[in-house]
Length: 293
Image (cartoon, rainbow, N blue to C red; front, side, top):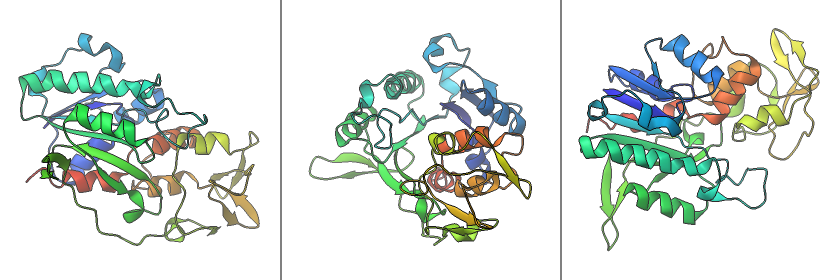
């Protein structure tokens, strides 16, 4: 397959395709985060970096050869976990980049009617915005929580034409990806040490690391150890040798379903930013497993 990945992050789409046995010929990546580009080129040096999505009309691509478009458009203006009480939704400066993805997808679809797509966004998005996105894409999403396959609570919508069916009296097209089997993984199963304060980790997000750590980093047994500002609420706390800490880099990889060493070349904060902003690998593998159908 030739794949165009928008808001590519850490190339979870490429990893998932590899893991389900689908060969990637060309993988185009639109990404601007330096750490994300560094990690992608480390694992997939043949990736073709395109840069800013808003300059897509300048990209040198054989558009008709693209077999699949991936998009995890920004959720900051849609998420209930945002810093602002009033969410701007798809009118926000970041989440309205969804429409750029739609324009790109429609451009490719004019040249290749069989092009596949996957679009992901946060499960707490307002229903009004979910409806707008669904009508723009011509298909309604499936809602899957990563808690079924990892030790993390991560509720997300997935829109795709990989597998669809018609539903309701009006025959609306819906994403027909079934729920993955519950692996019953709990947080203590993936910890290197310590005792968690809950069975499932709260949703790992970029600001989870940046907003809940002390500038005076501490080290313990080779892992970065942080003193937590607020040991309650949305922060998952681990008691380790009579100290509170957040998950370390290896544990963050496990929460998103990646191998322990996947982010070794990154700092703690870089890894937290990419993993917190990214896709859960086993969920994407599950969705891609239906491409053969």
